[in-house]
Length: 391
Image (cartoon, rainbow, N blue to C red; front, top):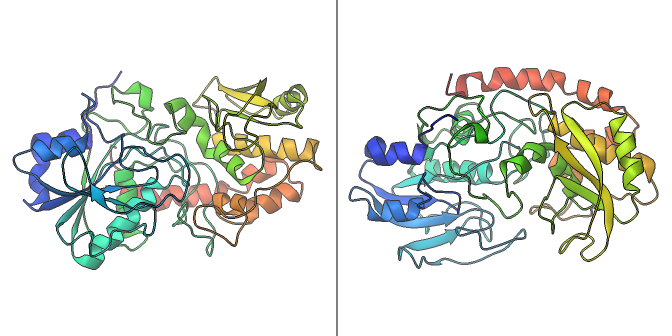
């Protein structure tokens, strides 16, 4: 196991001068901890050289208060520190001039999961835009990508399909850390704010989360483990269907199903796809909330048996395609809205365009769909090259 010093710890030990002695606003949530599981807000508040003046919470809140989407709350005083706390997932998703009036430098420290649709990196991007607009500085404290930095998978977001789960043309699995994405957003996508990334020490870019000693705190309510993150780049697409993605179970995104599915028939079909690094086990479950709450569902559980060869994006699409092919009369796409988007199918919002749904509906094979991504994947590897850190 590799010992890693987080960006937060590097900042507090030796890099706090990058804050310039200014008043600090911290974008944080429950995952914003050091190796001792102390929260950055408390560490900043006690630090003699840091003046903490505001806290900002992404989706699910500063303390993980909210389960569902589009929860709005106004500013309040944080009980632990007494500083103002603001939501960046409600009436506004971007710091306003009022929120920044007592802030000179914005610090971002959230645990990302390596998938395009996870909203935290767009909270970061919008904060970077606000920093540029209001003449503030932006500091990003880096953390590991739970699913490593080697693999890139999926097509690029289509122009005209930007949303809060996809603001820029990056693939579903991008293989970048938050600090690297910040560099990419600044240069390649033109945000251009004053940016400082505090890198981790001892980290190697291809490491999976459990190959480090970094502390894991669930970044969002339905991301309980790094194993969840491993399947999420493809299985998140089930949010765009009326098939349960396992919310209301202890294994969201690893378990999927619906009342009408024959779990053994589905598992047999998926095994026939010869997808690498994964085993499909027939499984039944009773969701406690959200889709099919209290109704017995049948489907499969994904068991990743070789994560280096496992391809989560095409695997998730293969499961959706199999269900639609086997039960065409019962399968349904989810209806709007999704993440503040009211005029598009949620699946298209997640997929970053209509192309993937049209490929599924058009009967393309899994091999044909995957092959259609290769040019985009190669293009993105070149685009991201100058933004990469850690060798």
